[in-house]
Image 1: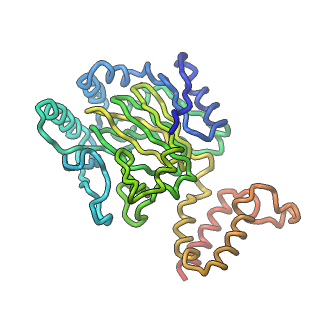
Image 2 (image 1 turned 60 degrees about the horizontal axis):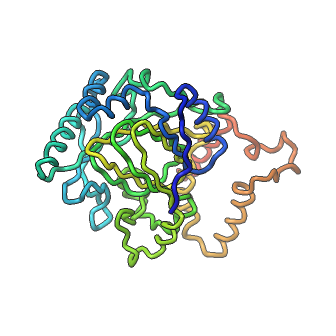
Image 3 (image 1 turned 90 degrees about the horizontal axis):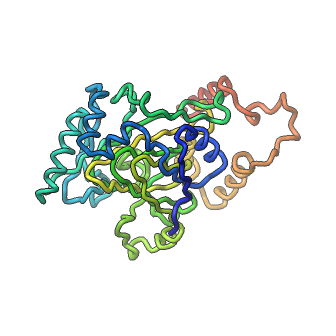
Length: 346
């Protein structure tokens, strides 16, 4: 277990360019201390929970949002039930104001030692639920080749004391804590074999999660987790701190305060017309996973040649003849998608 690489950010005006530069050079998690300390939402949260709630209320669009509700007996761990076929929490449509009311009541109940359900609003587009707030969070993430990439998706997360199972996301992630305190435990993608991923068909929130309870690991049931633990990276993220989580890095997230809020930015370093790699995995489960071992080994060599070997192996083919082996433009992508749809429908 080791601490995360950390950058102190004394000059708030330079944060966007600094993060852009550093994340393009690094492929490991990085904590940017104090990067958003001057944001009004952060200052409101530092003052008090009540001031934070009053601050976000002025932007509330009063639109439907989804909330997750977890019984007190689960101690904030949003996960599966014992069968691993159902979630241990329920979801319902509500409003941001109703979530805030519950968080206020929960904080009061905890002070009187009364057990209450935990509420958690997962990724919700910021401009949808709190329109106008982005103009008060002056952060402009600039990509090196911005004309090739889509804009970053900006989302809000809000809840009480929570534990979110270790999982990975396909996009790169810049997570900014604006209220409360969060503890992150991170693992490189190659640790997947030691993290015991759960079912694919039913997941707590859309992504496959580790079945290991990071806060209380069962080494008898999950002995290889000891290896993952030795390679883990941990960090506490306080209001105004930003944590960069590279694509496909596993992260377990604990909300340590009665009120926790996070704004995050998701982006990919490839244009959206190239599709999602996770779709390839889904198709591979259908067409490759059940093949005999010798055939899988042969296909592994083919994939290594066409996909995973980064050297230029098509120089023997004239450029005009490369077709889909060359860099793919949106028109070629659309044609290939149509071909795949026809093949899958046969």
